[in-house]
Length: 327
Image 1: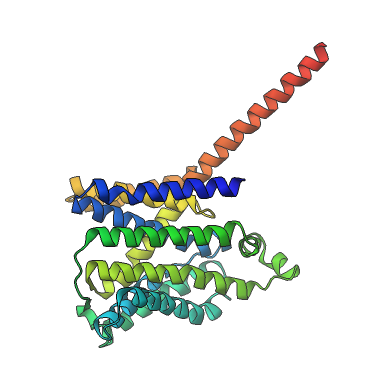
Image 2: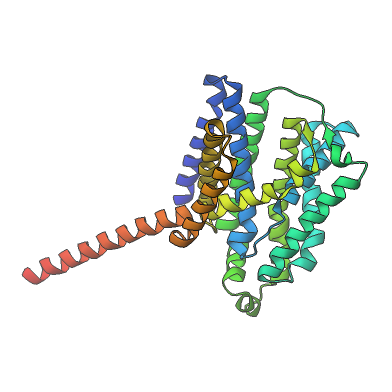
């Protein structure tokens, strides 16, 4: 019943969003909406490993960048069509995650975080020296100036990613295994779970959709370079959005991505000359949320709602007991 209700609400939201280009033809607004969808996708895919497994991946932007570069290479140099190219880009990101995951996921805590950050820096430096990636000059893709096309492509791609992750993480045994590893990895191993294999699967699961999103981004902008697709900013913003919204859920990172991206867009539109102030406000907001909202914004909302329900239930039981005593 709850599953059907969720699906109906979800389909309704996606359907409403898909109507935007029919009523709003402003190219700037469509661009803003498209990038907002992109950040939602990056936040929820980062949360697969961090929120559900407890491993902080500071190299998530590499999956995005590898997907972008593989898509660019297949389209610009091999003259493949767009949709097959982004699928290959996603597979390329997944293959890299598979190769990197086996050694790095044997590390714990800060060691894993540092290893993934170092991986990101290494891949970025590799892109700077390889001829096939265009080196520091980057790559150009065949231009295709059609804002509604990219709006719909990004929307439906992220919507499909959200739905697939919701099923795998919330409704299947795979999600329960991830949460068991997060809570007690040794205990999970004791009941027959193979943490090493499950963590690698989660790593690949977070990388493939991020690579597909990166491929869409590359064709959308028609130009990419190592700093724009493989820089730390891609990972950092996804981390901030997921942490602010609430880890271990899909709704939390979605809310965090929308709110933080909206703040960023509004700030840069009106106060672009105060770059340092933006970083100060953003850093202060995240620090405050970690201290006062340790479970993120969505976690605080759920906890407060649950507390109210518990209080109402307790008052109802107390009133019922008092009535029975009076009679």
